[in-house]
Length: 399
Image 1 (cartoon, rainbow, N blue to C red):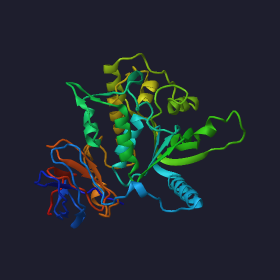
Image 2 (image 1 turned 180 degrees about the vertical axis):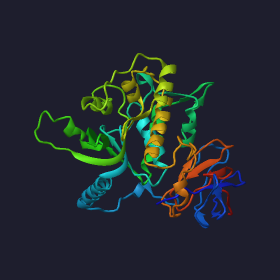
Image 3 (image 1 turned 30 degrees about the vertical axis):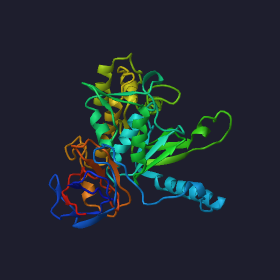
Image 4 (image 1 turned 90 degrees about the vertical axis):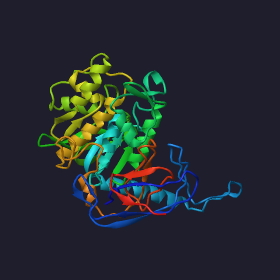
C-alpha cells in the first residue's frame, strides 16, 4: 500500500525556473511521536509556477502539435475488454469490502474522503444517479453559490476549495467547485471505487446486524414493474454508511428500509426549516442507528424528526466526516472520536506502509501555509517561492 509522504521546505526564488529536488527523510522523523518506518529518499520532478500566485501551475514535459494531431491506433475490441476487465475486477474486489457508502451527495462524498485517508480501508460508494454529487452541484433555488458556515470551512481548506470569507461563514462561488474538487481527489485514491448508476435496493441483514447492501443497475431498479425476474447482486461489508438524503423517490431509503423490516420503530420525517438548530443537530446525531449501519447527512433529520437546514452545506461535510470516524471506530481503527487520531492529521497506519508511491496530490493554499502535498507518489512537484508541507515531516530540499 501507499504511504503519505511528509515534508516542510522552502525554495527561495521568485521567477519562473525549473527545479529538481530530493526529499530526504530521516529515520528519526516523527508525527505525533510515531517513528517513520525507514530512511528513504524521493526524487522530486521539476515544476514551474509563479511565486506570487496562490494557485500552483504544474507543467508537463510533453507537448504536441494541434495542426497535425493524430491518435495512436486502437482496436474497438481492446476498448471493450479494458472497460469490462476493469469494472469486473472492481466488482470482484468490492464484493466483500470494509465500508459501503450509499449515496454520493455532499455528506457521502465527505465521508468517503475521510475514510480514504486510511489506505488500509477499502471503500465502495454506491450512487443510483449517473452523475454523483446529489444536491451539491448548486446552492439554494438552483443558484450557483454554496454557503458554508464556520468552522466547516476548515474542511474546504483541507481539500483546497477557494472561497470568499465572511464573518461567520464562507461563500464558494459555485457549488460545483466543491463537488468536482472532492470527487477528483477522492476517486484518484486506490482504495476507493465509485459505482454510479447503481442502486442499493435492499440491505443484507445477518443476526440483527447490517452486513452489506443488495445492488442492481439503477435503470433495472427503475423498471422492475415492466419486466420480471431481474435479480440483484450483493456487496458484503463490515459497515454500511447510509447518506441517501431527505425523503423523496430515492431519499432516506436506508432508514425507511430499517423501519419496514422492524429494526427501528419510526421515521417521523424532518421538521420545518431552522438553519441554526438543524446543522448542529445533524452533526450531533450522526450515529450508528442499528448495528452495522451509520446514518449521515439529511437522513439524520428524517429519522430524528429534526429541522431541515435549507441551502447551507457545512453540516453535510462535517456529518460525513463524523460518520467516517464512527466507521473507523467500528472497524477498530484509529479515529477522531476516541482520541486515537487527530482530525486533519495523519493516520498512524500510513507510517508503517512501504514508500512505494503512485501519484501525488498538491493542494494550493495560502502563501503563509505553503502548498500542502500528500500521498501516493514517485515524486512531488514543488512551486517556487512557496514552502511545501507534506504531513508535517521535516525534509531537506536541494536543487
